[in-house]
Image (cartoon, rainbow, N blue to C red; front, side, top):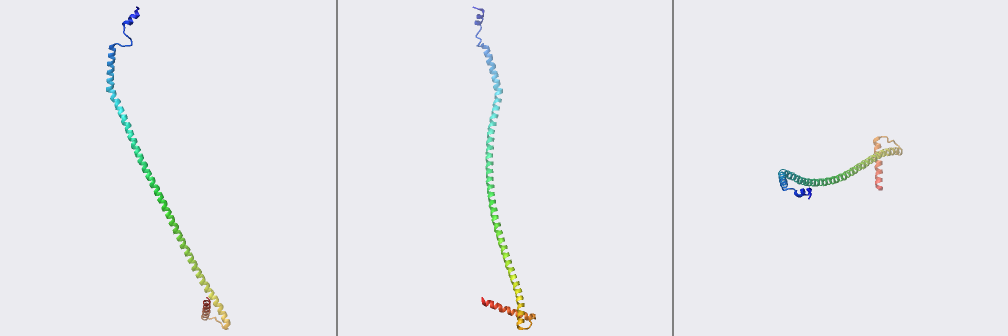
Length: 180
């Protein structure tokens, strides 16, 4: 046999490590794993617990915020409905005030019209009386002149003139009433 083959036969399989190495490796692994479990695992658990609490707290905060937002939305909707109701009430009041203002203006216009008509009637009556007075004077003057020419004497005396005029106009009024 060749010397190379004899050395290989004397040595063990290179893929399987010797037992003392396995024991030392296993012991080192247990020490490192124990140290990591003793020091690192609580920190990892602590971080995971904090993260879980933060997530749950965030969810609770989000639910609380959503509940608050929903309540604020309901308040806004209620305020909007109230504002719309108030606007409708104000619009109704404005319409009623407008209608009452129109009625007042119509009444005021009617009153002013009646005042103008009454003033017109009073003016017409005053003008009629003034015209009647002027006519009476003119008719009296003409009657006096005519009577003076008929009688042949002057009726220049004012008292006599007034009596003649009054008597003449009285007779005319009696004839006018009788004709009706």
